[in-house]
Image (tube, rainbow, N blue to C red; front, side, top):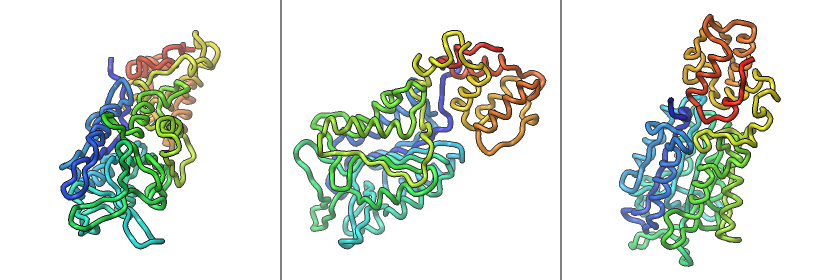
Length: 367
């Protein structure tokens, strides 16, 4: 039996705690990036393939390496994929009062030469714009403060000093574009807290719980954009009342799109109640179409599901969206087309080989 995976998921995770020339951060920052990577690649949680998840920690996270990582992400993430970028580390506010902007502070940032050694919001936004994926989600966990000691400045011990954090207009800039969204750990005038001795920051603790299934309250088998932010936004203030509020920015996002599997793609009984224990309460063709659109969002070509079930892709019409492609393909199959060997049962059984724990598939009965 093949493991359940989410092959369209791609991610770049960056964590910097030990800076070369700037005030260091708690070790939890490195755990944040490591644990998000482990959760994304776990077959029991999000199902991303390991080769699609790149992590840059401390000395690996130079300005050049981060920009290269973003460029590489743009190269491998296709149009119908999902791309996530996670950064845990310092941000710095630059520019004159009234025209302030922000930069991402990499491990080799020199406060005496910010323009050439950090990543400006314009550079970051431009790099994100090169990603072809229709679904791009950016996570920013900065600036950080441990316990009651809150530092809102970056210093290098040589007289150079900047206010730490990100401006609101930077958040907006990073979310520009169709299908682009940003989730930040706190508002521009707040700090992202790390409790003394905690493995992760408060924000990333909530994010990890959400990705591990807590955000999938309907038991759909997927972690979705709005659901994830709603969970994080409700959970963080429980631990930091009145002082930390996660931020959501999106320029042109209409759909509550899936970004990962939830608990390996398992659906709950609640989510499948409309199908019924025997599958008789819903038309089996409609139930199968709904499941296939979720599991193979690119359409019948996704993971070669149609061909593996005995179908002939050349018999299918081209459609611009996976949902339209599935609707057309199943209509053709119902009429006896789509290839000599493919049947409803063959398509259902091949899907079950990929997603054995998917509750909707397991209760569908061939007509």
